[in-house]
Image (cartoon, rainbow, N blue to C red; front, side, top):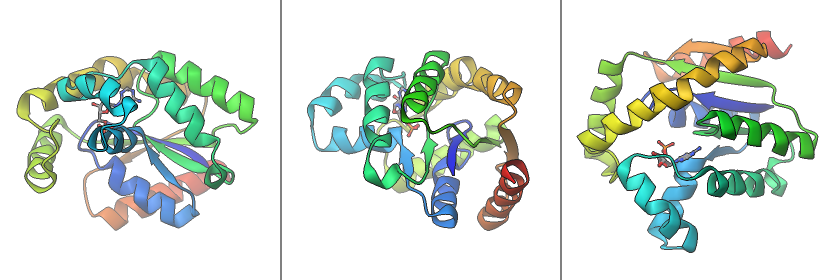
Length: 190
Ligand code: AMP
């Protein structure tokens, strides 16, 4: 199973990616996590990406596309994967299409999680207290949601037109949301 999970910051993509990872025995790959790991370990990639992340802006496509291409070529991604936080703009959609065409592994489905902005802001405030992410400050959160609305949300329409989109309400019990995703995916990919 090769999946994307999309939706605004705070909607629970990481949580549901973990559920999908376990259910389908596929790795969950988060570009945000890869960047944060590199930031923490002060790698070259971390240094290049850091300034963008701190401001809530997108890291340049060239850098981001390269890490996704490298990650999808790894052995553990041979039988499928779930990508969380990528693609985030139209040019990344194109880059992913090219990567997948090269690998000969088409996308099975795109899961879109949905929630109102008020709920997202509340959840991110809580996450900031628990995780202490440096990009979970009020200004940066607002910026990231704006970038999502402008650059990422329009991509859902493109995937809908391709017939691969399933949309699920991201508010409620974690396991109920997960089962709703599994059911819709089973119906879609049967
Ligand atoms: P996330 O944890 O997915 O919200 O990502 C945290 C930050 O990492 C984002 O605000 C961006 O600065 C950067 N980032 C993650 N994924 C991407 C992507 N696909 N393209 C560009 N920047 C990204």
